[in-house]
Length: 395
Image (tube, rainbow, N blue to C red):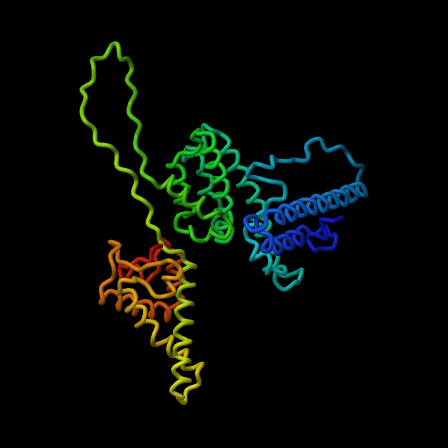
C-alpha cells in the first residue's frame, strides 16, 4: 500500500498517529509551494484514514458479534460529503494546528489512572467533535442563500464553548476564512453577490481576521487576502430607490449630483517579517563595522564583543539618523523596500526619530509586554510605532 510509504508510517489503526504523520509532512508539502506533493500527501492521508476506519469498524463488528447476534443497522450509513464543500472526509482541525500536532507525543504522564490526563484527552475529543459539528453548521448556513447574510443565523458561533479555546479558535478562524475566500472567488467569477460585506464585518468581530492578517501569509496568497479585505472593509454606497412609474409621476427635478468619492486606499503597512529581516540586516552591518574597527585599531576587545557592542550602542543612533534623513530608512529597510514616516506620511523630524529609537530599545528590553501587545492589537504597527506616532510603510 503506497499511501503508508507516502506518510512514512507503518500500517496502523491509530487515527491520532496518522494525523500526526500528516501534520509533520504537511510542512514540507504546502499547497502553494508544492501542489503536486500536497495532492499526493492529502490523498495518502485520506486513504490511510479510510483504511484505519474500516479496520476499526470490522473490530467493532466482531466484538458485537461475540456478545450478541449482529443485527442490520438501518440508521448508520457512511456519510460522504462533497469534496468541494467546507467539510471534507478526514478534514480535521489537525491540519490547521500542524505545529502543535507535530510536537505532541501524547497526553500527560501516560498513567491510565491519571485524572488530569483523562480530562485532557476528553477535552481534545470534545474539540474534535465540535470541529466537525461547527464546520457542518457553517457549511449549511453558507449554502442557504436566505440565511447566509443574516447575523442572527451565525449566533451559534457566539454560543460555542469550543471557540473559547484559543488554539481551536485560531485554527477554525483560518479554516473559515479559506471558505469565505472560496465564495468570494466564486462571486467574482459569476458576478452574483453571494456574500454581503456587512456580514463579513459582523463575523470579523468574533474571529479578528483583520487584526490577525499577518498570520495568514504563509498559508494563503497575500494578494488574494488583500483583495478580500479591501472588498468588505470599503464603505458601501446605498443603491437609489427605484421609480415606480415614469408615466404617473411628474418629471423629477434634475439636480447636479456630487460623484461619490472612491474608498480610501488601504494603508500599505510594512510586513511584520520584512521589518525583522531589515533589523537583522542592519545588525549584521553594524557587527561587521564594529569587528573591523576592533581589528584595524588592534583594541584589547575581542572582535566579536566589539561587533555586539556596535549593535547595542550604534543601532538606536544609526536608526534615528537614517530615518530622519531623506532616505527615510536604514540600509536594511531600503533593501526590504520599507520607509519610516509619521501619521501624515511625512518624513520624521529629529526629535521624533530619536524618540522612536529610544522606544524601540525599551520595547526590546520589555520584550514580553511588547509581544503580547503586538499580538492582541495588530493594526500594522508595532508598540513603539503607536507611541511615537510613526509608521513603517512599503515603498
